[in-house]
Image (cartoon, rainbow, N blue to C red; front, side, top):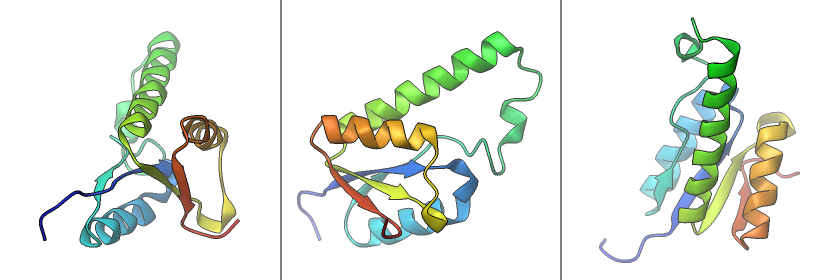
Amino acid sequence: MVGKYKIITLCGSTRFKDQFMETQKRLTLEGNIVISVGLFGHSGDAEVWENMDEGTLTKTKEMLDDMHKRKIDMADEIFVINVGGYIGSSTRSEIAYAAEKCKVIRYLEKN
């Protein structure tokens, strides 16, 4: 299949790494370009934060949050990984940002 592919950015807590990977695979096989998180800071990439002083940690988290909003800018829609209905504050801000930008917002689990 060749054509125009919808671009979907995944949003959600990085504690749900398995669900991110499963969703990315499924959406890709459905013919979408999927943009995901760059690392899983809450499940598997803990070494990223090791030995960072508080100032560097804060700046890095701010950069990652901003970077994810740029990923939302590139997308046609976002897909929220909300396992058990969980949506944290960072994800809430991403949802609000996507809504401001008139992006389609879909969820893994019904709210």
